[in-house]
Length: 123
Image (cartoon, rainbow, N blue to C red; front, side, top):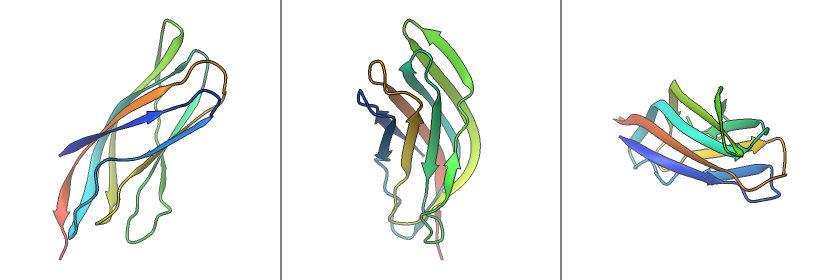
């Protein structure tokens, strides 16, 4: 299974967050195996993407994602990644994706992130 999350920076903000559109069904656990995506920001800005899941009832796991492939296209830097991971999310929860950037200057930015994995039936 796979689903997408889109994060939009508004001009003047250094933080953008979004809950994923996928809600883990009752009686199942989500196992995320691959994260892939692109993050578009004004040229010269640095980013720090983080994924937060709820596992074993704990909303604290903050997973820093490394988007270290960067290309410049026009006036934008595009950070890209395909990451093999193993993250878990409890039934009835969604995933929170947040991206910090180091500047508020320039136009807004956007991130398109895809999560791939599978559901496990809980006993």
